[in-house]
Figure 1 (cartoon, rainbow, N blue to C red):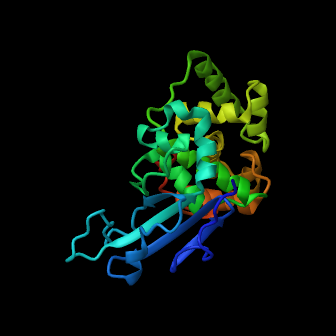
Figure 2 (cartoon, one colour):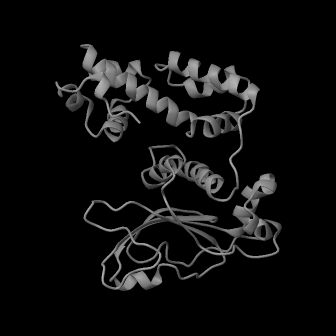
Figure 3 (cartoon, rainbow, N blue to C red):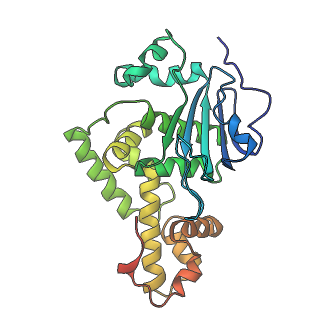
Amino acid sequence: MQATLPPPVDAPAGARLLYRSENALVYERRFYSDDPLAAQEFESDTDWAEFVLSLRPPDAEHLVCPRTLRSDVRYLHHHLVARLSPECLRRWLAPDRARVLPELQPFVRGDAPFPRTLYLLVDNPLLHGVVEALLMPPPVGSLRLFYEGKLRELVAFLCFAEPEVVAAQDDARLRDALEYLQQHLSDPNALQKVSERLCVSPRQCQRLFRVAMGCSPSEYLTELRMRRAATLLVSTNLSVSEIALEVGYLSLSHFSRVFRERFGKTPRAFRAAPSLSIEELPLK
């Protein structure tokens, strides 16, 4: 059966389209509770599964919208919406159907449609990285593959019961992987090599990190690289270009962008902050 595409309009009026394919639609919306568009927020126009994630407001003066609104208060709605075709979602859930949430079991079996729109607050810190990546994807060769991977992560967080536990042998593998990454920050191909060195597939490597560390291997490696870069900036006279190479970035612009996202300032501005010591770095 072919997937049924969502309505011809790429995303609701006032929304920022992030990604669209034959099986997925991802967009961001911001509007106030007294906006006439608000009435359209949860209208279901297809049989697609819909995940609505309520994001934090852009500043402290705006209130996050609760599910039950007070008529005397003006709320800011800020949502990340991901829609998946039922065929696609069933295909992703089927291999681990025994662990799928009980209320979704009829959907997985094909006995019922997706039960409802899942409306969630992004209060799980493990979910923050997935949401940030969906909102601001990095420069990659295939956005289709990137978004499919992140949407799979989203489904893994939202559609399953208890998290899986890392087995003892996996724990030993993970320690090896962490040590390897720490010793090879300058290698641009460190992620690929760590999977090969551990004799596991990239998917198995992803699972080990997700379950034990709460992040993907790439997110963990990025954090290590940013910490090392920050240390070199305040403790050496190496140029920013040299530091970028030292922590595995062949592109200076890419390094600067990732560093600014992590610390809120450019590498040069970070180095120019004389009162900031390594111990005071706002590490995650």
